[in-house]
Image 1 (cartoon, rainbow, N blue to C red):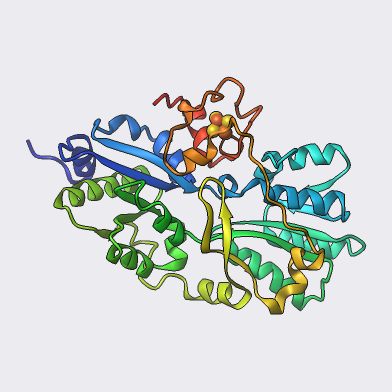
Image 2: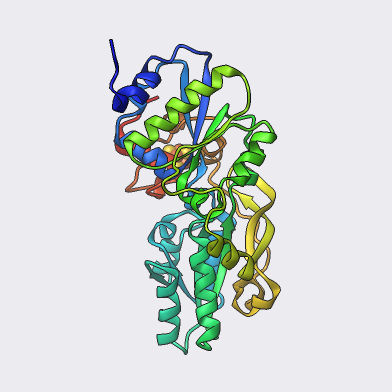
Length: 350
Ligand code: SF4
């Protein structure tokens, strides 16, 4: 029976009869799209698809929320943030809780909106909560440059920006292959993926449509039985070897690598991005002398295990009972990109 080209990837995936394989979809958007297209139901039992640490809100540790609340309540700053972060629990409360106690928390839709807010409220200190990976960090860098160029001195960033490659190294024993996020590699290029391959880490870059995701899985399932580390760029219409040179230049002009904490993974050396010393005036930690905050997660929440690929959301005893999108206990249920939210929304039971 001949198989039409458009159905070939699906055929390879559904008929896989090779060795057992664990594939980690690192990106939260991939997690949701794989559910939405029903791709999980196509996978044979030998293919174990697990979620990883690619949701920026999910990997942001509780200490960061504590810092933001400190800035709002102790320093009187206006916190500008994307909406998802507002309900993420800190050690004792979320920003939503703090808002009910008088904290000024403003939802914005871009980093430049936060700069505009600061320009329009010169009598207030405005702090933007800068979380995200290589895709969103250039926007934060642009915001800092715009504030500097326009002489806006009441604007700063509280950074928790992260970079993915060090996380792949930290997770290399958790999966046999990774689905690399297409939008991250569009900025960073594929050189890093080749280096990971040289370190024995396999993966493919993939886009976000059903066909792109199935093609990526088909490539993984074709390459894995050969027994050697592999890398393929399955998103060449967007991702090039060099990536976005202008985006990379912007990142390195404004930010530099630092050690940073990931929820569930601990501190990963040089996996964060923080403002360079010449931009210290826009660094909220420096500007307001924020004291170190360790942060404590709810011990009943298993977000950390989920982000390491050690358990699936339905294995958390709180999933769907105490913890729902309406009443989230942990970050992975709060965030639209979180694994718990995806499993809840699409009824994933395994
Ligand atoms: Fe945490 Fe809720 Fe997910 Fe359990 S279901 S791991 S409590 S976010």
